[in-house]
Structures are given as structure tokens and as C-alpha cells.
Length: 462
Image (cartoon, rainbow, N blue to C red; front, top):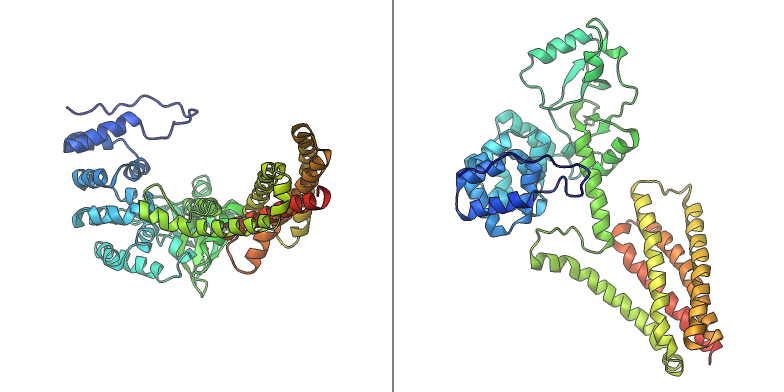
């Protein structure tokens, strides 16, 4: 019996509005287990390619293989584009050659390049062999550009027109063309040497009279992207100038492709995700990674944290006599270190994000550092007062309260300074601040916190 494909309307305001329907996922897995191809196809047909990609990422490797084998010729190339890189190669290896060929032929050149970038050479060649000669040449030319460059990001399918054409000529050209991209936003105007000189939106073309020259209705914002420009800079330009698409040029300034907003936003999302993962010291891990792969990614940073923890312990060891004399110090030490670590992480996160969006520059760096230090001072004073009262009420020692209060102020001020200065310094010396800052900031706040607290205790309490 074929499942009913009708789905109840989903409230877009609900938290799970765009998540996979759990009931449908269960039905799909049941169809896979029963090897019911008709049922599986009926259940999968209403799903968007992105939802199918999510499904493949969430189920086990065994179920994934069974599903792909049954789904077979229904497999859409867009699914490959939406898949996480961690399982994309596995999925491609499971597809029959003819199914893979049909799936890839429907993709734009930039999507094909994105597929090929992370594959081994045999699989790259298998996909290239499925393309028509003209498409293969276009893809290979894109692959010749540096990795993570605009040349890799662009699509070769471009709608261009001479800068002396009228609206009517452009419309007639597009109507008669058999090779327009499935989606595009601009007609790129070029001079006789194929240098892009302006963008005209489709909306302006359709709302203008036929005799209007295209050169009179070009967009005011026009950015040309060099093919060798880093994709991070491309994404920044799209976000900064609110671009919809932008022409890409070679070393001689000739039009070779176009980058669209959706591709630039993917890069931005990847950069944001990468920063978050690196701040946590988990590299580029995903939920689909196997145990050993995940372990290898996390082990080095856990080892770094162990080394920094040993450094902090060495500081504590210098004050063994003080701690032995005042056991209360052992109780309160973690509070000072924890508060400093959290404050440092707050400043660090703001600084790394500001560096990524280029809001933190040489012109405002000292103002930002001063602000974070002052924030640390104000918070430090507030929590110092609280901890002074706690020290007096808990242990009956006004002097102990004073010690932890002063140590709290010192550590939160240093946390604000380190959380901002460390990522700036790391970026200056060419180290990714998102990757390495956390370990340094934590080390600084732990060492300073323990040293200030135990050092003051040794001076004032003994």
C-alpha cells in the first residue's frame, strides 16, 4: 500500500517547522527494511533535496546504503550538493555509474566543482566522464583555479550582453537562447573586449520599454571579483555591499563566470560554523563522523588543555604551605579561576567574531581593548563585593574576603585584556585566532587567578 503523500500544513513559527517529520522518517526506514521500492519512492518524492540530504546524514551507514540502493534512479543531483562533505564521498561511491551520470548532468558548473573538490581522483574522473565535452572543459577550467578562490566558487553559465544593446534586444536574445542558466539575477553588460561594465537586473529589464538602452538602467552597486580572490573576501563583499550576483574576471579582466548570492552565503555559513567549532577545539567534525575520526580531531586540543592544566597546577604547587595552613583557599580557588575563564571566553568570542567580520581593525583596536578591560574591571568589582561577603559569612574571615575580592578584580581585568589581545596577536602572526585563542586565554586566566589569589593569601593571611 502506497503511503499518503498529503502532509498537514506546518506552522512556520514552530521550532520544528522545517525539520524532517519523524513519522515520515520512520516510514522511510520501514520501507527500506522491507525493501519496498514503490513505498520508498512515494515517501521520498515530496521531500526537498536538502531534506533528503539531512535524512541521509542522520541515519546509520547501513540504512544509508540500503536506501540509496533502493532509491536508485530517482536520485537527484541536488541531493549531492546539499550533503555534508563527511559522507558525500561515501554516497557517491554507492551510486550506480549511470545514476551518478544522470544526477551530475543536471547540476550547474559551480555545484559540480563543489562536488569534485573533496573527492579522490578516481571518483573525480568518474564524474568528469559523465559530462558533455563543453561542460567538462568548463569544470576543469574552474578546478584549475586555487582552492577556496572565486574561480572555484563561480558558475560558468553567464548571461551577458554588449553594453550598446537595448532592453528589447536583450529580451529577444534570452527568449531565443537554448542555454540560459536555470536561475540567474542579472544580465552582465560587457565591452568589446569582454570586460564587464555593469549589471542589469531582470526586474529592470522587464519593467523598461524595449527601446531603453541597457546602459541607462544598470545597478548602482557593481563589484567585479578577480578569479583568484579568496572566497572569504568574496563572501565579505556580498555581505558588505548586499550583492545578489557579481561577475568574475580573469587576469586580463575578461568575464569568465559569475558568483551568486546563495554560493556566497554558503561560504559565510561555513566560516561561521568553522569558527564556532574551532573555538570549541573540535576542528571540522560533524555528526556523521565515525568514532575514531572524531577522536583524532579532538585529541590534540584535549592534550593542549592537559598541558595548560599542568601549568596551572604547577602554580598551585608553589603555594602548598599556604593551602595547608588555610584549607578554605582550596574551596575558593576554583571560583576565581572559573570566573576568569568565563570572562575571558566572553571577550574572546566577541573579538574572534569581530575579526572574522572585519569590524575589529587597527583603527579601533585600542578602543576595543580598553572597553573589554573596563568591562572586566566593573564586573570584577561587582563580584568582588559579593565574594567578600561570601568569604566573611562562610569562613568568618574578613581578610579572606578581601583576598578573594582583590583576586577576582585582578583576574577579570586580565581576562578582558587577554580575551581581546590574544586573538589579535595570533592573527598578526598568521595563526587562526579561532583555533588557538581558547587554550592561551584559559591558561592566562588560570595562572593569573591562582597566582593572585594564593599569592595575596600568602602575604596577607600568613
